[in-house]
Length: 113
Image 1: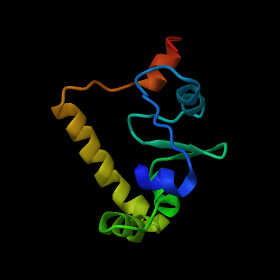
Image 2: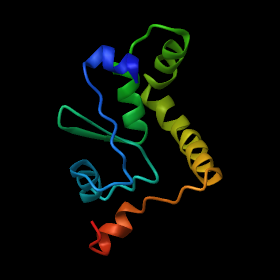
Image 3: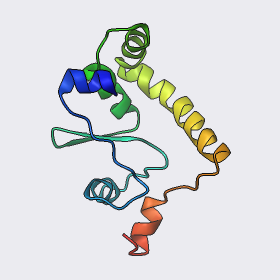
Image 4: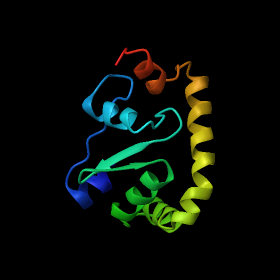
């Protein structure tokens, strides 16, 4: 996160468990936030593997982790292939931590948004 802020100037993390304009934008495009991360940059919405790909491109290449991240995810094909593994790991970790799903699409359908 720090390296991305150094590269592009600012980065704001949004808590998707709380209602926000950004979450509404994601939901209005029928994107399930439980199944993919979202990045809004310069007014453009990137979701899932495309979000990881764009973050790799704008991030710094200093440091071993950042160079590996860039090397792996700068390819859209590699990002698409590896993203399901990352999503599985995230979902497993959230389950182990006892976190419930966000269910943004279900909440929107029930007008709880």
